[in-house]
Image 1 (spheres, rainbow, N blue to C red):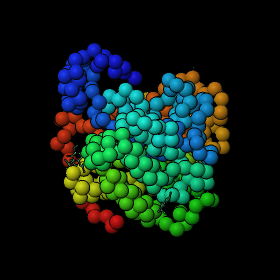
Image 2 (image 1 turned 90 degrees about the horizontal axis):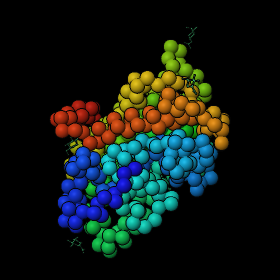
Image 3 (image 1 turned 30 degrees about the vertical axis):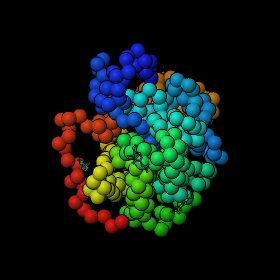
Image 4 (image 1 turned 135 degrees about the horizontal axis):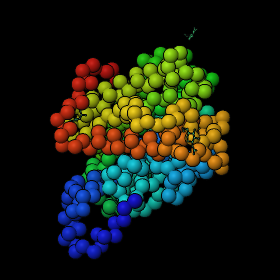
Length: 370
Ligand SMILES: *[C@@H]1O[C@H](CO)[C@@H](O)[C@H](O)[C@H]1NC(C)=O
Ligand SMILES: *[C@@H]1O[C@H](CO)[C@@H](O)[C@H](O)[C@H]1NC(C)=O
Ligand SMILES: *[C@@H]1O[C@H](CO)[C@@H](O)[C@H](O)[C@H]1NC(C)=O
Ligand SMILES: *[C@@H]1O[C@H](CO)[C@@H](O)[C@H](O)[C@H]1NC(C)=O
Ligand SMILES: *[C@@H]1O[C@H](CO)[C@@H](O)[C@H](O)[C@H]1NC(C)=O
């Protein structure tokens, strides 16, 4: 990533101007940091090492994971950068956001990544795979970060509170509540207990509470990522088989869509009631579809050879032409796909001036019972 050393050469007042105008373009056309801090809540799509210290199958701190990442395997479920890494690059950060599990000291001022593979909105989601940090657990870890931050910024808590208002909060939850809960009837009763519509409501009620908690901790710019086309993942295809006349497991994608519709309603409702905050819905399903139009060659198989967990078999050599593959393993997209979806997400979270007049609130016309 970019080096910040050039700043040292400028006189102090230039630095002050730079800091005050962080949202503007630098003289050389580079975008200076959009926000001072980036906090990430999510699952394996964003995990960058939090699961390394847990007893779980959902842990990938070994080759071939990280084969295209500068420092090698880190615990990212990808060959290279995840979407949150790329969004951090696009926002002008000089470093990727570090995992909560290993981050101490002033580094937390630029944000922390709480994401945990196999985790979901519901506590029990993913438990058949082992340890994980669910959304409730991630919020608890965020409270710990806030106390640490208050100590760093001085005993005056309002300094930390003001700082926390300026960060971007990235929240991408829900995929595992389907993949590692509802569509695993062997381990979880949810699909016998609820229709997809009822289950989406159960998730929405819990998620709504969690997001209000995040707001109460000072979050004011929150990007909420909808669930992607989980039914098209190679693991879904091998577990459930493609639906007749489709290349994907349609019941999984349909359930995800129902969840996403509920999520849109939540986002609109929060954005309307918390008038000092900006809640943005990011259409993961649509972005994945758009990525497919870029001409990837292999859509239905991962680049690496996977074991029964759907993760790459440790130390096996993966495919050479990774940018031709949509999937890296049986669940997770390649960095090539992440580059496209991250750019699309970034443009939604930070719309260019011409997009500012677009109103996304029309989704909110149906009231939701929460
Ligand atoms: C989930 O677990 C946490 C402990 O990690 C607990 O505080 C919380 O109440 C639980 N949530 C639900 C909905 O049971
Ligand atoms: C905290 O600091 C701010 C200035 O940064 C000041 O306005 C405020 O009065 C302080 N609050 C307390 C409780 O000391
Ligand atoms: C799937 O398609 C085949 C051939 O078109 C048909 O024979 C079969 O009945 C279909 N199965 C279902 C479950 O619709
Ligand atoms: C690249 O991927 C294609 C599949 O699209 C495969 O058939 C081919 O053998 C691969 N080429 C190399 C050099 O790995
Ligand atoms: C959210 O609300 C703000 C005003 O508080 C508005 O400017 C913005 O367009 C809304 N965003 C969405 C996605 O509705």
